[in-house]
Amino acid sequence: MNEVNQYILDTIKTHVWGGFDTPDEIQGIISDLFEEDADERVLREFVSIEFKKSLKLKNNDLKLQM
Image 1: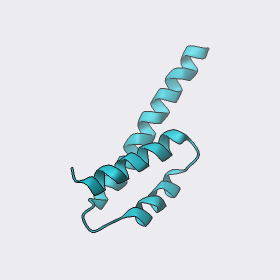
Image 2: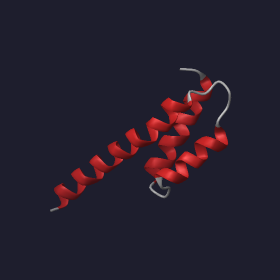
Image 3: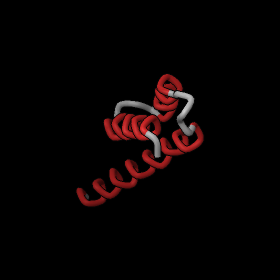
Image 4: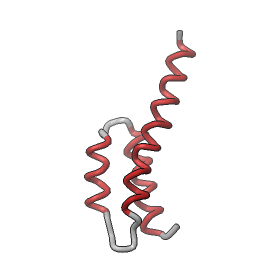
C-alpha cells in the first residue's frame, strides 16, 4: 500500500471511530484528499468496512450493559 492510500485510510479510521461524521461526510473527505496515486475504489469501500466494525463493537457494548 502506498503512502497516499495509508494516509487516507488512517484519516477514514479517525473520522469513523470519532463518531461525529456520517458515511457521506467521510466520502466527501476522501474526495478532498484524493490524489492521483490513491486507489479510490478501495478507499471508498473501506468507509463501509470501518462503519460495520464500529457498529458491531457498539452493539456488543450495548449487550454487555444489559
